[in-house]
Image (tube, rainbow, N blue to C red):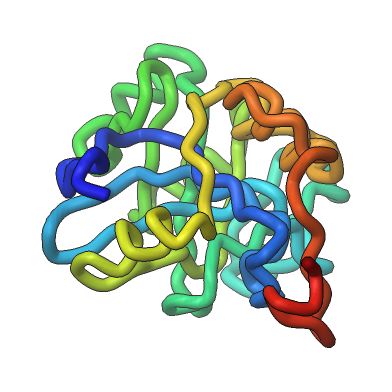
Length: 198
């Protein structure tokens, strides 16, 4: 039990095991970007909403130059009214304009919550662009407890999954990249409990 350090390295992927039945996180893949003794946070990679980025930006009077069908994503249940942009490095000029207010979370992948950055990126969105509503958050020690309870499997970050246009296979692909065959995991149902599955 002591083999999992509290200074869990980020970024990393968290894949929910079948025993996680919370609708916010069932079969979810979370890109964990922050982890300290005080808490952890990340964004759900495979929860597209039914609202498009274009619709959201129209309400903010921000012109959108990308695909009108691109959906905003549900990042997690914490502060769902707050937007966060995850984006790939585009042109150097564009990056220079947002670099001071953005954070590089992985080589070539940046994060921002700055409205001016959103306005700039929305006009000519880079190939990798995702608008998250809310985020996944844990209090101090909570995530470690959940991992030790086998709610989450840790896996390597795969850049292709971060901006995957098809969210359906993301959970299985992330599991297999972590060396886990999802078909071998025990199935849990909302109406059952651990004893009923034996």
